[in-house]
Image 1: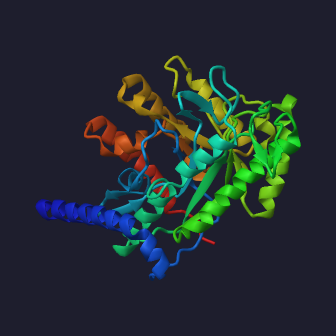
Image 2: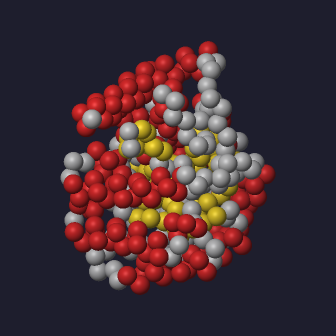
Image 3: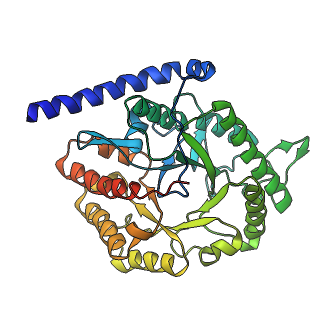
Length: 372
């Protein structure tokens, strides 16, 4: 019996791999031919949002072989769906020997302009990667008779029109001055429209554009970030897109996230990353989120192979459980840019245990998705 179960799991895994490869190679032809596909409904909201740092030339490519581990897992003799939402974002990249920061002004890093924004757009929508890989993976699962409970939601970060950047470039023949709110809004609006254009060309069937993410993790009132965000929010609201935000712990404006114009916000605890961090920091984030009607961010990275960080990982799981987060809140997952993929393929018994533990939580939460 055990040998039969192993063979069955191997067959499912092998078949999924072959289908993923075939679908990636033939996706364009299938789209043009209008092949039959299962219609999926939408969930009323997101539940588990994976942060995918995608685009920078130092990242893994997030092809189907990597992205599939975020979409589902093979457990209990069948595929089980994991994250229902994916936030594609990028902070830094290096082009022609110069490091650029898309989030904020940082010493030693250049502020990207239109040219660097266009480069990131092309990387974000590169064939077979990122959103494509999510779509291809779901298609392969549907072909095997395992549809997801709903379409997977996709969010994209808006590259921050960083205050003070006078070399961003031109729009409609006019040089933008990013010391002005109106010009910063023009740049953000242009970026959203560029994403929408590329999205429509893809003709995705199983994923949907749910909204956008504000990349800067605090609100600079002195530079009128609040005024800018209100304009961006109103623009997106007319398009029925969410504007989400994930501020760091004690970020300026976090308690006024709704008033500023965000549709929803996820509080960062910032506890995992420093072994000197005290547990009250994590508890503060949970309490602050409850007080201000925010969601939470789960945080970990490749350092989970070390005992101290592994302890922090489990503390998040426990604190979120004790605080009712797993039962009542949406959760965004920061995993350092590929850690979940590497955890999913690891043969280390402790890492496999951690992956299974968090995976069990997500699968259980997915069973409670509300469908429109």
